Amino acid sequence: MKLTKILSLLGAGALMLGVGACNDDVSPIGGSLASGEVTIRVDSMPTAIESECEFYDSFDGRNTTKLLGRINVPEYGRLTCSFVTQMMAATRMPVPDSIGVSDIDSVRLVLSVPRGSLTGDSLAPQQLRVFALNRQLPSDISTTFSPDGYYDASAPLGARSYTLSNIAKGDSVMKRDAYIRIPVKFPVELGRKIFTQYRTDASVFQWPSTFNQYFPGLFIEQNFGNGCIANISKAEVYTYWHYTRPVSVLQADSTYKSELRVYRDSMCLMASQPEVLSSNVIDYQISENLKRMVADGRSIITTPGGCLVKIKFPVLRLLEEYHSNEGALSVVSGLQFEVPALAVSNSYGLQAAPNLLMVKKSEYDEFFSNNKLPDSKTSFYAAYDSERESYRFNSMREWLVDILEAERNGETIDEEDYEFVLVPVDITSESVSNYDGSVSSYLTRCQPYLVAPTMTELFTDRCIISFTYSSQVLE
Image (cartoon, rainbow, N blue to C red):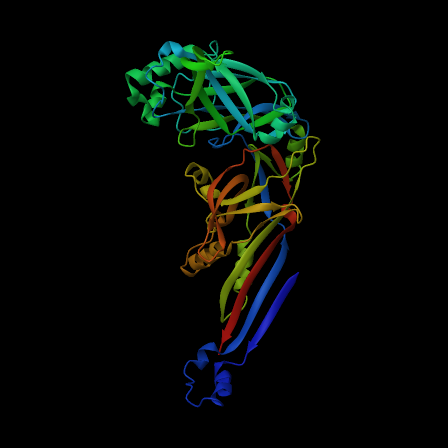
């Protein structure tokens, strides 16, 4: 479909004549600058995009979302997830001086899963194990990182069997509690050791770097179970202690008697936080079904990891269209790119990726490593529209304007300028209220999509490019 709208201008001189009937003092200077015919072209071009599906297993796994569990879906493949994390310690321990090290009676790791943040069967029985790291995590960690050699497999800090359901707690708790919590009991000696360190030399806890030297972190793995993957939003280690306190108790004869009672208290000793390093360890074995689809030339994207798609945007065709009116002054008004997409049919309810990043191939690696955001010049993002069944990149004008500027400067437009990677991402934004009452939304984070397993087919043979520009032939 091609829509062309033509506006014919009689020229500023004619306009001035009309105005001059009311005001003889209006100057005709500048009239010739605006004379001529302006043509506004809005071209919607169904286009087959050259694309290539590529398998990959290593990517930046540092994320606020940590995956734990295992699923095996015939159409999707086999996915096993664990994670490693450094811990951020509390800089002070608000424990009364009367509490001694012997009063520390237990230590627990509490993993929190937002209710509903899982893939699979919440009633599937699971078991996890937790190990203390004995080496510093590498700064260039990725999802293919192997924790072997970073912990003692014969000495777990704790293990826990669990399900990701609150059903046993009753209806009222299920409605009230926003999290499913998985407590893992740790050796009490760990809490007493750290407690003693606080009392003797608290400087260890003042900075994340010094604490990570003292306690390198945790490795949490799925030990047993299949059929469910949880999104761990928080990993917190709590220390519990007890103390006695005299209280006055009313007696039957209306007198009071002093009795000693035991009380318990606790504090969050350390937690996994965005300020310290944490990374998912992902083993994804792609199904034969997806491999056949890729071999047949279909464009498949999966998460976490697995498949991404590389494309060559037909910018040369746009440049040819743009330059078709020789001698005209042309201005680009807009460029949109729409990619039809559907979730690959499966029996597990896996959906299409909710957001897609389109980034220049030459900048793909550094985009995530440098925590960049889509800038509408070399990187763009689009949310999945379930009604249109497509991703629509609406703001590509600046990229095309830069291409035209480079062309005018005599630079050669080569494949590096129009080769892009399409990969699912998780987008975080913040809303800010303006003085006039309106609300502005700003992107704050763009990370590889790790919230849930997804598999999406992109129909790159029927993309739609909407190109809007105006041309004026000067007289």
